[in-house]
Length: 408
Image 1 (cartoon, helix red, strand yellow):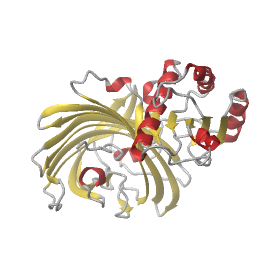
Image 2 (cartoon, rainbow, N blue to C red):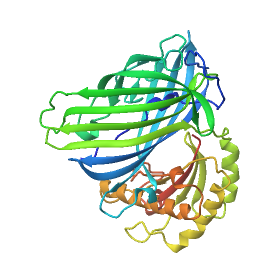
Image 3 (tube, rainbow, N blue to C red):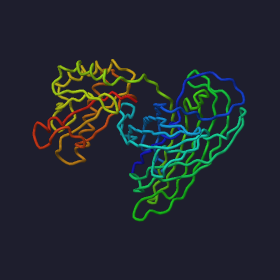
């Protein structure tokens, strides 16, 4: 059993803004919202995973959140958000290196909620994200440096894969806040505050399944606040969570995370797509299209050695040209998606499509198109066909790799 921790898709949905210098003085922290505002936030998590007190895995998690304010009424904002998580994990003792692998897409979540100027959320119980709610929240008065306040919050976990618990799992807590005065984040000064909370819960039994008998956790954060924009500019956290399971095992997660706004100029998708289509016009079985995610470069019938993820040398020149194109848009992250025809088992299709996406990503990384933390991979198997799998021609089109220049 390997728990997927969506950790730290939590406070980061509040992140946005620009760096300024502020005096250390009494200050009222509040959220400010403007209809139509859109933000892109990226968090990175490094964690060690212990099983029965022995280090078993090391993981790096990349979380991407896009947030849009769809309306503002009486100072409260209606917001929509997309939470996307990718990770790379290595088993300790195998000689592997998580840092040397591309990030593999894990799960997507959609969410809608309302948030008021003090940070309190109103959200339907069916949403899994944001993972932590009512954090941060503020007392609605001026605060002096060193002053503290407390407020209740709640963690929401997705235990569907781990424990077969179908509904969002809620764990309440009480957080303690302290206004720290000015603090430095990446050479810029911000008014900052700390957040500290602990969780302890003994859940009900889940008949016929392994379930957590006891959940304990701790979070200690520092948030750097942009006063003018009424949002956090960045945050960092140390965390620890322990699951005592009904089968006698103990799983523990220890780590550190940080998050901040990553700004990129608006993408003119149509103009970019036209330019890229012209650049790849000499590549057979290649096309460009615009999607909500960004610009997709689709390489159909890309060739690998039989039943493997080893690229044939005939494909190298295609990817060399794609690498040149990607270098023209350095501000955008990249997702490499693998697709298969409808053959073999679903599990086999998913595995080979993921491995082939990783192979293409490695080739592009070798051309220095991006740093490793900005290239993601995802296997789709045969879930997204573009042609009829009942014909050889259709199957060839479905055996493709897509390189997506992501808008957010």
